[in-house]
Structures are given as structure tokens and as C-alpha cells.
Image (tube, rainbow, N blue to C red; front, side):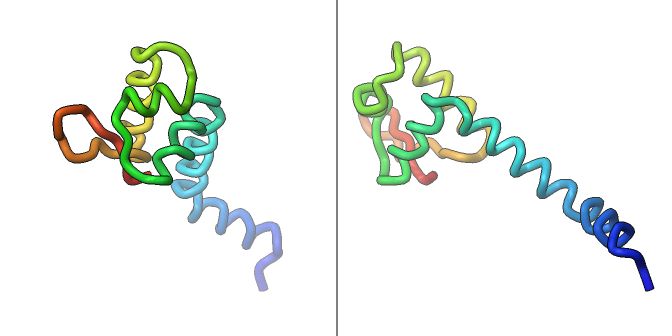
Length: 90
């Protein structure tokens, strides 16, 4: 019979990738602007100017930067390309 410690160690090894992903996601949403953007996009698609207006976190360039970080992490996606750049699908 395996000891509890050995079983726990094996489980930690098996779940290492999932644990790393969760830690990364928590790190990403620990930023106030990114967290607010995620909360907003959970309600639907918004253009960048709308996101900036609602989130109220600095300049447009900062919003673009935060959206790029979230997009590269696979948390948000660019929406349909209409006349303005839109983001959604949290």
C-alpha cells in the first residue's frame, strides 16, 4: 500500500501542467485593468474605445496592451472585424 505522501506526490506530478496554467491565469488576472476587462467582456463583445470608457484604466495604448496580453494567453479573442476592432469571448 502506498503512503499518502507518495500518492500525493504522484498526483502533483500528474497535475503539474494544469497547476502551471492556473497559476499563470491567476497572475494574469491579478492586474486590475486585465481583471476589469475580463469582467466586462464576460458580458459580450465591446470595441476597444468602449472597453477604455467602461474600464477607465488609463490611455487607449494601455487597453490595447492589456488586450494583447489576454489574447496571447488565450483568454480573449478578437471579435468580428467591423468598422472598429472588437473583443469578446472570455
